[in-house]
Length: 432
Image (cartoon, rainbow, N blue to C red; front, top):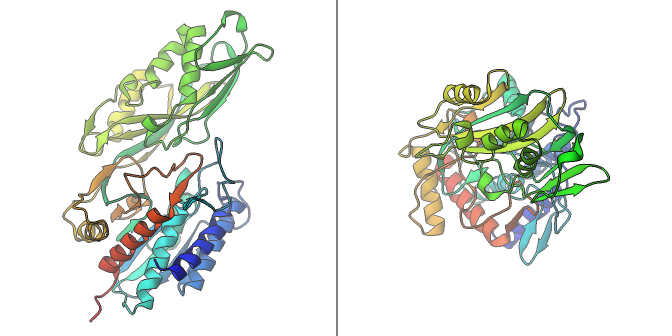
């Protein structure tokens, strides 16, 4: 990435980061709210400035494309997870401190998506001819439902092959299955209000609970008690739901506290949900794709105590049927509500797509890396033959889904070079 490209890229990323694209209230032609609509408009405007033709699919998603022939998809998204915790910098202002860029979306997924667009533009400027019709598919609902992809499939034709720059390097050939559901426990004991967590796929960093029968409480480790309001407050550390081991779950802390006050009701729930490797719900295990994990994402109180969980189940030896049957055995049929499932992804390591992208990564890094499996769920699942290709590196934590999301400029430059080589390998004819 030369200085001129970096300058233009940085200005584009700054524009895009400034859009607070957390899903909001639907509006006309903005099904995911104004902030997401603005981010889509900015991205399509940037794509036009780079010479791509663009399509706006009713505010659900967009397309920027170039070239002819068999289509190849590069799927990214411009929506972001909500802001939580304490930030060093304004989360929706791209800020650089000590050569590190900060801002919500800088790594997930605004930065990587723009890097792919700029790398493709550089290849065109250098005289490379596309061998494929390169289609940048710009999603607006990746973090909370994939309605953008559902809409795209209704109004457009999804390419068979491609990648998403929204996972990990070197290249992800396998992704665990993802099951999200809400457990509805009978009317709870001892509380009149509880609220914690922002999304199913985020480790909750805060949980607040109001006691209705405070006579039994005392000092509880890890939980603040306000006697005048009879309120418990638990704080933790957010992380991506695919990596609950990197977080500290405030909801689980709260359930642990309540289990001391009212053990008959809360202790079985706490014991079931406290282990991030799912032993409490009977799903502990692993295969080559990794361990089964459990993230407790949200808790609330209506007529029932509602707890939303995110299970990442191994791709090879588990099925969604096994997960649901086990949950029903653990909690009872009436407790387990409707579920949302993303089946596992598996693309053989020896396919040309995997080999071409891996070659690009190894050329830039000088390594002899092998394809990997992850617990995250990416847009690669929207393709018949798709993989995740970056933009996370295993040796640097970008704080994705956490406060102070970041990316050093040196990491950006390496990522950009890898995308340049990967897109050249898969979508362009060699120069004579």
